[in-house]
Image 1 (cartoon, protein in one colour):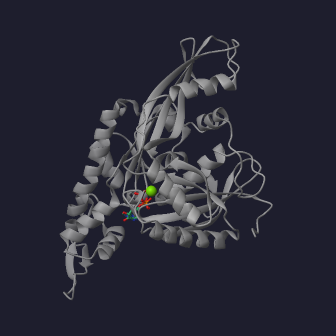
Image 2 (cartoon, rainbow, N blue to C red):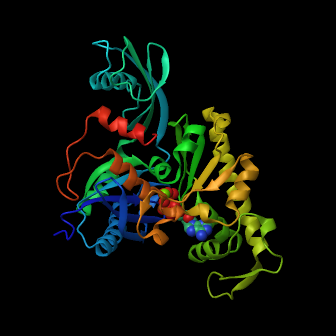
Image 3 (cartoon, rainbow, N blue to C red):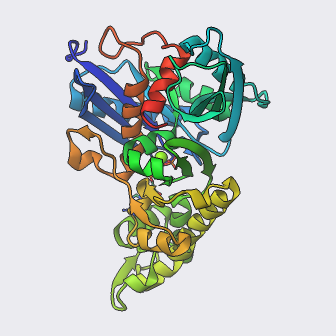
Length: 410
Ligand SMILES: Nc1ncnc2c1ncn2[C@@H]1O[C@H](COP(=O)(O)OP(=O)(O)OP(=O)(O)O)[C@@H](O)[C@H]1O
Ligand SMILES: [Mg+2]
């Protein structure tokens, strides 16, 4: 039985390519979240953000889950979880409806959003999110909350995110196999954006780049609303692989060298900084300079940023992000990453750490936890009133849910 039966708890479960993280938050009367438990375990069953081995994924989730339950002193029954992978598509759409009684009602808003979601989607994809960007009443643009306003014609601009049905089903299958229910499946970069971006940045225009292990997830915000999302299937694992190949060392040792000693800018390394590299088989370890290591890492990181830059150019929002780029995710912890990104993008770049939650800050203020913290925040802002602590509750109306996305500047 749950020890914290009288408290309102919320759980974020980030099933990443490198690690599974469970974060348990306690929500107070004002909606503020205090982290009371964290569990993390290496992830074995994913490739490039997608579940490829259910058994291994279930085991990783179970380990992270019991660690978080133990720390929080509670039993977890359900969680908000994320989704990523190259099957994710983002598109902008537009809907129009007549305002029935000259004053916009929540039903009018639901109707206009329903109209905007009528787009051709392949049969193997499902809609994950419909995120309102703005409403237009009788050609008056830029309206965020149209309910109660007068007019005859209501239009909505929305960003629609779709994903492969099978990928979502496999996530649900893994979570259910661990005895949990899925509260909602949220696009990972949407969650990370909630955790690391400020409302001012979203208003001014900003691009979030979550550099993980298997995927680099991108989200662009302009005028306070989401404008573009995409997933680039290349990230930190590629760097580890490059190091393993270049220095002929096992992957595990390449990963350790990368995390402890790598730098993605050659000119930041000193000429006599040395690293010992294990060899494969029975051969003796060898010594290299940190400069040699940076020579392998720098071009790959530059390539990540060039891919992201091309994606930004393709989206048409490159010139609308005055607040620049915010980097997060485990691979954003690499030394020199902000400087290199500034060189490539020619824009201001900062490192985004999760904020807006209290408790266990030394553990949680880590770019690798941006998605997990974001799942808590996003889930909390969009969840219906709960009866029990972590019980599943009924769905909110479409508009109520959309409205809270808006209030969260989504
Ligand atoms: N200090 C560090 N310096 C450089 N890279 C690091 C550091 N710490 C972790 N990483 C790298 O970050 C990556 C994992 O990032 P993260 O935990 O955000 O991934 P994930 O969420 O599990 O995966 P994904 O989001 O791609 O599915 C790994 O490639 C790891 O090597
Ligand atoms: Mg991730």
